[in-house]
Length: 80
Image: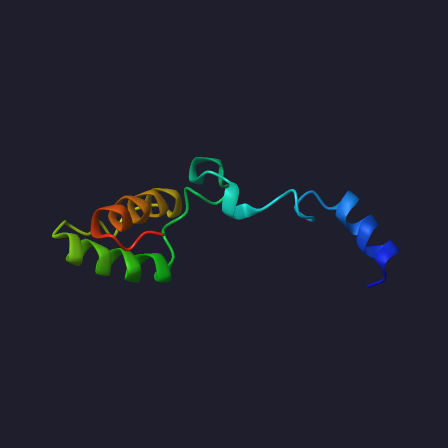
């Protein structure tokens, strides 16, 4: 893609460019946040739950699982 094409793509695509990152989007704002958590989330959340001595809830949504992962990472010291 040429510089001109890249610049046009950044203007036309709302998720393109350095100003936007899905990592910065709050889980409650995710368009798929109400869907069941992913397999990767479930696996990691189960591990974190065991390490923290807390129950694992397999029925969490993607957004709820993400928030639970953040909380358990903080509790177990695995968070960044």
